Length: 117
Length: 90
Figure 1: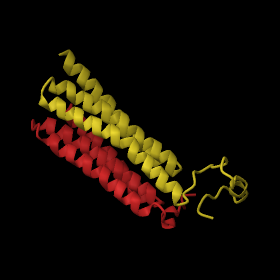
Figure 2: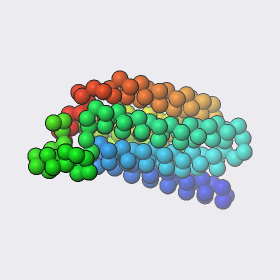
Figure 3: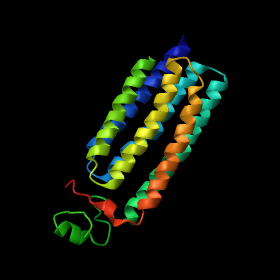
Figure 4: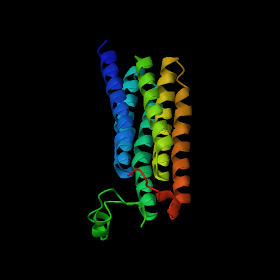
């Protein structure tokens, strides 16, 4: 009974994080902030949902498969996020308020327009 | 319990799709597709549990592999390409 309660709680919490990530990816203003929202849901939502399913499955081969899926998602999540950020930055996609970069003055002078100069 | 999880995952997928459609720049679309793929992996796992078919988890694992490789392949294609930066959501 306790196991079902724990797994139900993990599942629902995971669904909440998935949903919050989905809302975050829609409402955030800039690509890099959206990437944060998407990677939050990718990692934490996936962890909680898969752990919730593990509780349901108990100590069987199914749990081992779930552990492999979880391990793979945790390995590839940050890797793909890093690759995406690197690709975006290399092709000239600047963060929204990149006042730290050298052309900050030009950015703020031109009304904060961050599209490719 | 599983149906609630599946509904939440489907709603997240719809949100990711809208970002993929709206997404001004190319990288928003790649990000949304990546998130959609991850949610598909979770969805397959939960549906597998709902229908009592544990062999769905192999499909979920393969899908996670393909999703990652696909995203990396696309990024390699568009890394040094200025076309992807039309950021006109301001």
